Length: 494
Image 1 (cartoon, rainbow, N blue to C red):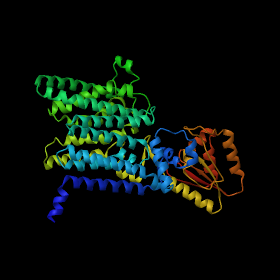
Image 2 (tube, rainbow, N blue to C red):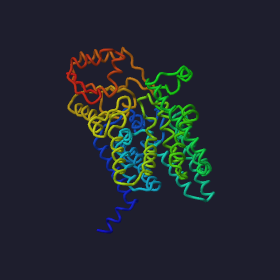
Image 3 (cartoon, rainbow, N blue to C red):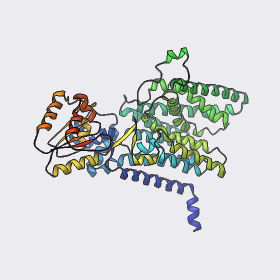
């Protein structure tokens, strides 16, 4: 019994147990939503269809398509095969998080804090089971953090040089997959900035820690910059009246893009705020010379500050989700400096639970279990039940006409439809459905004596009505139908 207790107390054992908990939690989420997909996941799932993949022009994440294509070639087309991609990537990221937390914090309690936030923060709950490139970016960022850790652990110049080469290749590789993709460029720029500041800190911190006056001057500058940061956030959110000079910068941060606009947000103003808060946190308040984690700290802090200043009035957070684990690591570094008493640990736990419960956008894990939907950010559809019901009706003798929002949806699901078509496809634009086509379909279904089902996929009903206003109203007014989550339908004709 004593040996078991001693084993459990080891930090490495606790890390393994917490990783297994995270893995089990991800599996529970995947099983709970069997057959459900986020709309954008199907751009990748469609690569499991060789005929469509050969003509598809969707190349934002060729590495994810490659994984799906090869996994389905080996194991076949199946929901659980597709979900191996996010399961493996998120589990890898969690392993890296626990390793870094274990090595870079003094208290074992930080492992529990990191696990709680990684498992239950609302955006991570969503995207850790999502087949998208955000998880790939997250894993790459954590590999960079791991390499920075290794770099600071060795004193051999040759080994450091090899680590630096590996670091730059990892940062550059993702960007090379799709150079026009801003989120990949963000990973590259953040990685290089973190490496540079980490290197500078090795020489800057010891010098500053010996000079009291300079430290207080930096404190004053940082406080002014932090005030300006909150002031800008207030102006952008309409809480503070904008000064006249603001008109010169009216376009800053207002681009309706999911991703970071790198030249502006990271190479100019964003870097200023980052360095300021970095100085405030490490040099002034703590006065520590623990510069070994500077670069790792920056991998999370830099994008966090860029978001706070330039994206504080936006609702879509997909572009920043890849950096949330690094921000969690920053929180762990901060908590690790607190007094290690039961009272303070209780306060840490309380703050963590509150962060999980009210995390953006007011979707806690219990609500996610009931309804996986974040307005403008993330929503899932029960494609599995929709397609299974349609196939059941086909087997019972009904003919099927399937209407999908785009060709990626159409390529993902193999049903024995008499006729299947996509309204449009923003990626390939291979079809151009006209109002005459939809009117013809409407007239045919209204007058046919045969038994049909009309399958209307997710995000499709409003697209049909854009072409022929009143189509869906007429169908639902004249025929019985089953409605699934988020406006997908099976309409029974005759």
